[in-house]
Length: 329
Figure 1 (cartoon, rainbow, N blue to C red):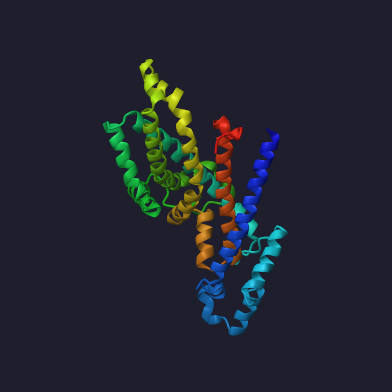
Figure 2 (cartoon, rainbow, N blue to C red):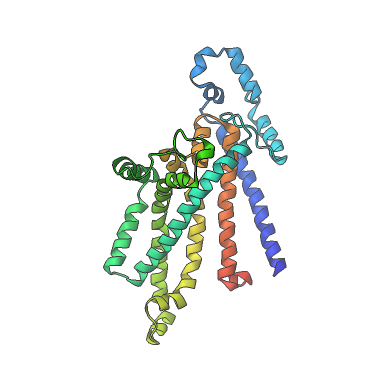
């Protein structure tokens, strides 16, 4: 048992290292070919006041005057020592910026992830148990409509309805404007997080609900379910005894695979609501040519998604003993 678990983690660690190496090379190549001039983005509106000599000094300070290959090797050497560089926008170490923004984003994404998973799985199971009835048709209509809805559009819609028209929630930001940091309460943060979390969770429900419905419909038409019905089992008891475990594995896969979609959706949702998280920092780093911060965020997002897949594999081993014993792929 311990040996197989150790081998499992060693294989995952090797895959993570290879993944980060490949992403680092591709990302740095794309960033170096970007049409955005980091020096110009760094100077901003004061471009007319900065002389060519000052531009050269700025480029030299950030190492932008060196060839891309040399900058990449230097960045790799710093990464090997745990130094991700200094953000050109925030003038702070990249690790500090990511850690600060991650605290805000992880609460937002966790709330949206749990809501979308629980509601999506429940909706899919209810639709399958009431196949071709009005409940099933209503859930499918809801899911099909949301499957083609952009995240930013849903965010704007919720913002207009609940923040502008009804005034139930603040228009944006992560905390109240004009309030000192030490005076901000967790209730203030929670109220500002509700609309962004709803935006992400509402969009994420459709995929899980539709897949769970289709899988459970197939299971409910199988021979062993027909035998269970013949013995008098029905309703929730039938689902709990014979359907839950069989439909749980694909649902777990989808739920943890949605980490990448969740991170991508957070980028748009945080922009709409001006929520100070990793998504907003990614957009700022991309538009303003902050190479160190952008590279750090890319690697962090890769680790974030990889962690989701790793947790899914671990839950597989708990839910299905065949996976734990190596008898199922």
